[in-house]
Picture 1 (cartoon, one colour):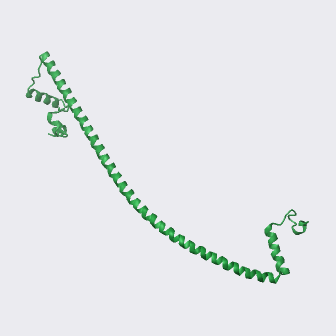
Picture 2 (tube, helix red, strand yellow; picture 1 turned 120 degrees about the vertical axis):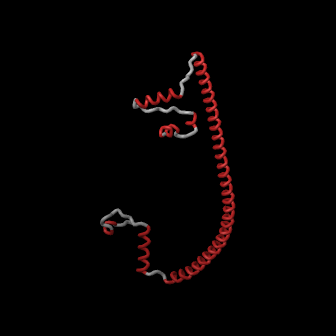
Length: 191
């Protein structure tokens, strides 16, 4: 069937109507020329029966859906209970793990402290031994040389007075008490 699109569609002569357009045209034709009344009446009766069947099917589906929803709700509740139980177990396990970690950390810190204390003790012992050795060596040298330091307190005071008179600051030497008293030199200077 030849179609003259140039008359109907002057802007696009190559247009070919789509299926949707054909259906619209057929509906318009039925309205204008009128269809069989009998077929339309039979169609309504059939349509009513179809509608009833469809509604019955929908109702059945709804009932089935309700039953399945109830079953799913029960399953969900059971799952929730199980999840809660597992959550409680998980929480207790987590707490136990945290406590274990804390105890492990405490043990590690204690071990480190013990190691540090041992190291410090070893260092102190080495220092003491070194000091003893040095003092012994000094004594041996003094004995060999035959020189002993026999300055009296008066001579030391005189030296200090000479230094003061020269305008120089007196430098105090540390004594055995300076180890036990913090800032011993500063306190001594204030006197």
